[in-house]
Amino acid sequence: MIYLQLLWVFVKIGVLGFGGGYAMLSLIQHEVVDHYGWMNTTEFADMVAISQMTPGPISINLATYVGYTTAGFGGSLLASFALCLPSIVMVYLILKLFMSKQNNALMDNTLKGLKPAIAGLIFAAGLSMMNLQNFPDFGCGQYNISVVICVLAFVASYFFKANPILLIVLSGIVGYFVY
Image (cartoon, rainbow, N blue to C red):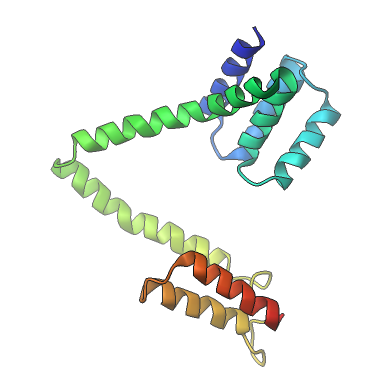
């Protein structure tokens, strides 16, 4: 019975949890603490702290932890899969739609129209990261090493198609020695 409850809870959270892992926290807390009583508020707070420290999305980490504490290893696998299942189904259906409308003029024009919007969103995200926390040496009279590293990494990636992982490692090494 616990497996069915875990499946139902995390499929429901996966369907209703828009906005990412942190937006799902209140849904998970409501189900796990308030509705089913699988853990108390203190245990849930500890679980959130542990989920933030471990790599990966916080919602998946929370699902894995809740599943493990309530039903062992099988519960952790089931809860994690159940949380991802709605997204998997949605992506599958969207891909089927795209594949069936592959040569459709309306679909082609829609996707062409989305490209500039997506590029703008990525650019806006990049601009929002251009702050003193990420570039502490930015300004007049400064060496601006972090800005130089950023520009060189962009040029190497965009124009010379350099491996992004290599660029991250090299940037980290330079940053380590400079700072």
